[in-house]
Amino acid sequence: MARALTVRPPSFRDPIGSRPRLTLEKAIALTSRFNVDVRVEAYNLLNRVNFNPPGSVLGSADFGVISSARSARTVQLGARVSF
Image (cartoon, rainbow, N blue to C red; front, side):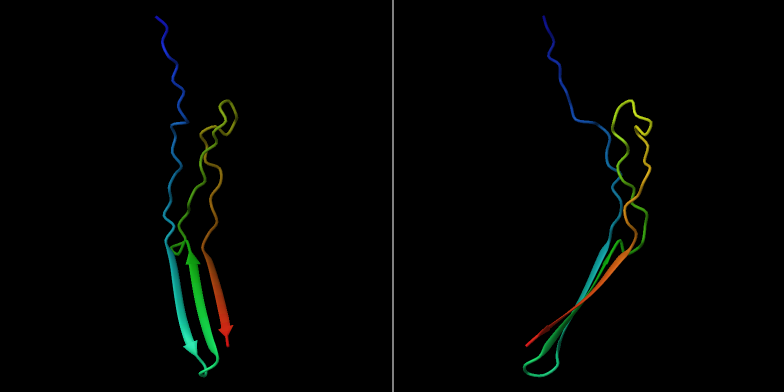
């Protein structure tokens, strides 16, 4: 009897990091005709390190090694004027 060969995807997991986000938005009416919307967005609010997945090429020098990280805290500020 021949046995079936089962091929599975790689069994390692991406180190899932904590990436809390915060968005604050405020609508301000300047006059009856003009409005301003102000928005602040913060990504990776706590500025914790979030590693990239380990190297996955079998036989390479970086196989299984985590050698880099995702970006640090990012804050964006935006405003929109409507009339």
